[in-house]
Image (tube, rainbow over all chains, first blue to last red):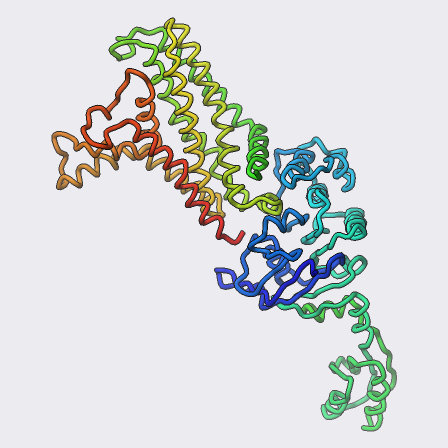
Length: 303
Length: 275
């Protein structure tokens, strides 16, 4: 059974903004899935549909085998959530927050243990309104852990955390995954999911543009390289000749240099083609494309 | 039942608000002053025919409706719109609560926050007043407590229902203040205006019987009328009217309407909304 199953999921808000344009996705039980994309790509809309905060305009969403709309209460009983854009109850203490979740879920956790896991046990009896942004994030993460959920949904969990906080999130995600919990977490920063995720999905303007393992993405990135060729005089027809070569995806001109995006094994062909056409090649070097650049190319960013 | 967790959290949250404590203290003092005045002054000075233990109930009741309606607005207009605006609703609804649990929990939690000072103030006022006049009208005082608690929950329910209709606290404040102004301060004008319009734009010499019904529409009107139904030996205006609606129990019907209907309408809108 899939932990999350999206079938042609669509959402158009009443204001006319289209947030999701038919997303199909299957997150397997027990995996750590990274949901990537720039801000505004539709990540939070997807998560909000999983939790029935927002109703889809088309398609369907199933969570833990249950319909996300019809059986939402059942879904949320088995899911721990760190939402995005939340605020805590300023007048209640950290402990009262956790106790409220324990009571709401009919769980038997001790508030103290939860607060220790997220490292804010010393602030347990202070009003959450006086917490720093990072402590609020830790508190909310702790609340998501109550009741040993089958699914953990973390929307931009690193927001407001310092590096040690980010590391704690990573540790907790791994601990939870080790006891069989499926973790679905969103981020707009690749490096945050790279180290922990089994698979990632990349969302762009409401469409899922890639779903793969991190290695799979790395392989895809590794097969392309950038060739910088220092050349003498050349004409537009020379560029054309390189562009039509198999394995060449892009050619850009940069004062006295050609930058060619090229697949492995086509590099020499680029050089010989130029030389055969009488263009003098004075120097060349290749650069590997990083995973980060690949991610940016998927999401339409530029570096 | 999941709404109990919501109600309990809401109640805890409100108990930490200094404003609630301050308002409660003022209300209790006011109640004691009223009881003292009633106990110490003569019937002539008070402007009533006879000073009875039953009559004390209406003196104590006199400041309830204003206190409750204003305080209910202050403590509940943000109850749902505010949580939507700030995002704390996302925490609440990521837990296994339905939107109905949230609305019912809010009405009960905030209703209790307000009902407690109401009951305490009335009980202290009743004790002081009864001691001063040397007589206790137990049934009348019990009726006062019951009707006041019903009124409190009805009013809080209206305000929470209005708060559920919008995601902006600004709009929630306009809706709730509008309700208060119309039903609390302008209703006399509406009432007399209806008579004037239905009588060919002039005021008749005697008011029609049905004006009684119009006057019961505001929660505060229904509150006083229901009190007449339950306090022995008191009749109020209903007795003068010879029609099926000429009964003080109409007040109970109206209070139940306010308890249920606005909250149900608010729930319908809230349950369909994208958060």
